[in-house]
Length: 336
Image (cartoon, rainbow, N blue to C red; front, side, top):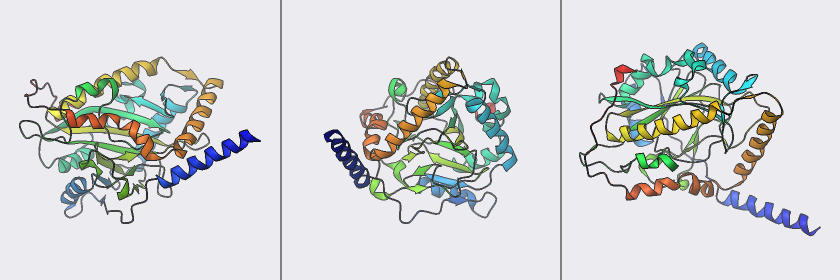
């Protein structure tokens, strides 16, 4: 029929567009694996972050520690009662998990000395602090993007994060991500474009690198790095879970990011507390919706989706921060 022919043509055009505009695989992925304790590991970590924008830390935590973290996330996201926030673009999130009683067993993570040995090396002895960013993702559907303040909270980021302020201070905020399952044999963990953290745009021609962390590994990355998660929502899978925290150099860039982050996380957490649902038809319909949405996002060209996800990045070129920031009310790193 004519209707079927139209649908076939539309599907074929969409598939061709997706193929032509896909992000290619990086032919020569950099070696960003860091073994803490080895000779010169701190220097290699800083080099990887500066050059490529990310590093993969092997075995930072014990596997049994991560198993316990996974149990907390699984119960909160997929227990008899689903307590996590369903996201409009697919999957679930726990914004500001450190403020959720059910995650009291994870309160040790941002204070852990092993984590701070990595952060101390990354910041190379300069003062840094917790930037308040902390969340859990459960089968989070993530398209290509850079982590900047968006939407209603974009106003908090007064300075362009790709330019120094009037005192010569630079933006330097790192996210540290822990996957709560192994990804050795799949590409369902984080994907990155090496070196993209120094650019406002996403350099598709560079090609992406898929990371393959094990439970206990950490991925640390400059939040300006172009990265993506997985666009496929697998309702029958074991659950693709992660937990992440953010730390920044103690300066106005981190102050501004933190204010916006706190606003965003508080808003999302309030919404989360109103969406608690017992397992049943509503949750099954949500799973079906996320499956269809993920399938649709997988078909669309990444560069097209990125036009929307990184719309706020373009505005940074117009930002100016020539005036000194207000007196900082930052907390010292030791106060975590």
